Image (cartoon, rainbow, N blue to C red; front, side):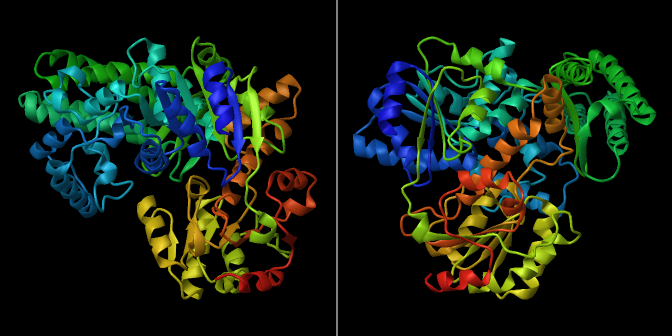
Length: 608
């Protein structure tokens, strides 16, 4: 792999390389990068992987190769404390829960001790704490060079360091955010480079779509309303109408959310906008925004926060108009509701054309790698999605002996895929097997509903530590899992990839269903409709390849080292009784297979 990367760095032909688990792909691309002396951007799939790459893998290779050029870690702005916004909270603390107030105290205690301002370093801070939007900035509320703390800004310092570094470690979200910013002609977030290496590259098509499209959320209006109240109290105490404007925006944004029902949901936007109640709610919101525009115009010059609030209002009105322009072709228009907010999205059906323009840049090398890029032996799906028409592809198998190290079971007599309480039924059927596993287990689910049903049964029936995604920070959950040694972690999609647990701590992985995207997923349905218009088979060209790659990621959690041993249980009999099941099995490692849970017992007895 290192030889292929080295050649790609000099030949500048894009390289797409699938390197099976255990290949050592991180070192295989780092060593040629360090030896090349080029300026390189390394992008990976998540902040956790980014930190592992920067704090563990990169220093190891730098020491081994006596490399002394500067390197930098750069994250998106939401990962850094904003000094200005934290100071504003000293004047007025909005309504926070008890947990939110405790988290705010954690941030304040951390502030004098940090050099990086990275919120991920704050001990005990919940991953989705209510205080995070209040102490970090976003594109809408950052004051930029007008900020009184610009010279001390943690984000500015991180970006300055990145511009001066020879190797910069980013994540895919920041990588594509940078491309989107460059498209506007207003600067850049990461420096230009001689080469770009994108690890966990299977994630790129989905993430790219988010940034090459547009999104707009009711949360943005609520954030603006809150910030206008704060600004009025500090900069224009005599202009009470600003608070009234903020209240009106807040009320109408919340009314719009309620028009989409009380439950979380997602779907196509076009039919929703035809409903009279949603049309009316949007009209009321737009009227309140017009009123806010007139009021804030009168406050211009009263202070930086109010001036910046006016600019945000103008920008957000433009965004809202854009995502509501549903007559545009080549995009999927969809909405998503959470408990508190509704967001609207305009996503391109394909990023291939836009990304191929990047690939056309002269004197730049591109390398795409992951443990899961091919379907069987074909890279056609990934290359088509990314516009990689003229690339070299390499497939390297894992060095692990799956025949000796693992077993695969697809149990008989499973509940139907759409059976009520299916998570509960699955958990009850696997109790004896999970109890036989001497070490720890992952129970990976394709829905939050199944996750909670499984966790409830396991906590009632097993005398083991049961950890559940969302109950603590992801890093701390994994630490607890590894330290316990025989815990069961129940999780959904975010634990299907990028997780490296070795040894006895993980000896069993259960996957509840083949990970097909939900048929009512608005982006998927728009792409399938596009395929139908072109006369193509959407299932074969879109749904199946994506599900195979996702399953390969989940399976990859089990065997992480030459000494690892474990069992994989996939509780979805479509793997054996549907024609496409063979496509899944042909893409998985060569594990000995059985349909009987009891047949796993002899192998489980050999585990320590």
